[in-house]
Image (cartoon, rainbow, N blue to C red):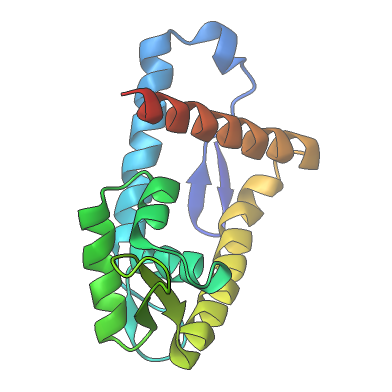
Length: 170
């Protein structure tokens, strides 16, 4: 156990992969994901005096980086239902962050575009995420090498690919 900035970190020397039973590894993943989801469910002021959820901001970010994207495309990218994404998109539109336009050759398909306010907020959100991710990993990086942290993110990305693949087949 290591203390850093008021937080207590558990720094294990044992090989969890080889020594822990799978149910215990699964429980660790579950607890991490639950706490992370709860953390992201809270509304944040990203620097403009208004409050948004991380879900709203990550959908806004998808629109920012993919102008003209559709609800269906976002739903596929995020593995969410079109209904859930539509609800978030409606909130973003009401808050003046995006606009909707019918696609020229597919009148039923609606393209999503960031507004000037949406672009500015996305830039604030990116800065917020950059700063807070660095702050979150700072005490961890005192105990793990760059290579170990890189492996963590590569493994997380591989797990995400597996989960997306599973969801496509079910």
